[in-house]
Length: 446
Ligand code: HEM
Image (cartoon, rainbow, N blue to C red; front, side):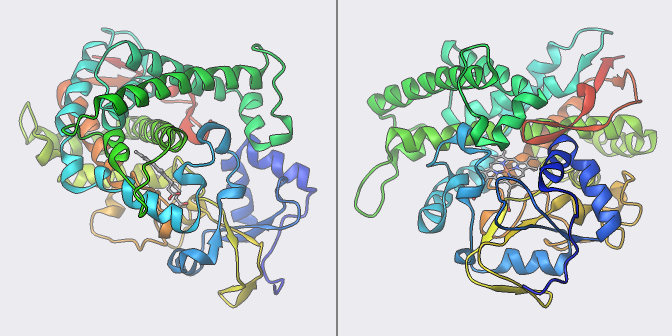
């Protein structure tokens, strides 16, 4: 590899700590110093430098390269304790493609529209739980709604014992992961030791095993019921067979289901929390949204909400400014690849960096400012703006989560008057694998 790419000079241990402790500060600092591509030594990958890439041409080369040009799985080990080895996010090659083909359709097109009423109903139920004139956390409220939505979409689970237990366990687990010490364990497999139920790792594996028991119980029950009319993702996976007529094993099913539960709700909830924060911090944005949404009447129809241009621009800008995933999955080079005249040899680790791209001043002038207008009359390419990653690993929930964001936000905005209780001191912080607004964004009904 030609050494044309600037790199961090501090010891690898410090670089890793800096990145884990405050990833936004890490990217801001090194983007200002080195630009949109730089190299770092991140522990866990000592033998190969990690290249963070936010430059549009380079990102395009990565996203359009054939899928066998890169491998990931093995280094995406932060997810493995949650998702297991058979999860879509851990697979490579043919098996990855096969599982993607199975999981994509229910989250797109007509199948996705089946969920519109459920999403709006669950949002209206959540509105009823908002305390009168008392502060509440909008992030928590959003996580409650999106968790219920994903339970329905993935399992077809209606309210009832198993559904409630699962929701509680998942919520507890994700709350625990907010603790920086706890979440750091996922980055260092060698520290993943069970010192009993009160130790962080001991707590994690016990919660995980309780969640697994419930998922396996549901799988068993559904195998016995064999109900062909159900439209949820579990039913679809239960009827899937490979070329030799073999169905998915319980372990494979469990890994895909838990992946969808974990990646499919906190992500959307955190994005919604940011969206509430930005909209309620700016009276201009709020007025424009009010004009657009109120024009649909007191009971806006889901099909109308999802087509609103300003609401769409607000969603896009929310996902630009603090993308809840700062990076796409790291790609490990399999055969030498040349990007912008630099050759990257096998085993180099290329990380399309969403945050660097979205904060490139050339593409997004005044990048630190929330400005939905930039999305109104301008189209950004999929290598300039990619909150959902790209190429053969792009997020399978992209269309679904945008749809969900518009319906949940639009319904809340039309049906309840809210205000922020405090506008100050909101900073981006890491919560598990997503970047969320600190304090959860406290709001109050008026
Ligand atoms: C605002 C919400 C969301 C954001 C910002 C987001 C972002 C991302 C990103 C950046 C990636 C990595 C893409 C890459 O490496 O190129 C990803 C992958 C993934 N996401 Fe999402 N996501 C969201 C919602 C969802 C939802 C709702 C689901 C499922 C219902 C989901 C399931 C997945 C899965 C399974 C992958 C792995 C895909 C693969 O490796 O082939 N995500 N997401």
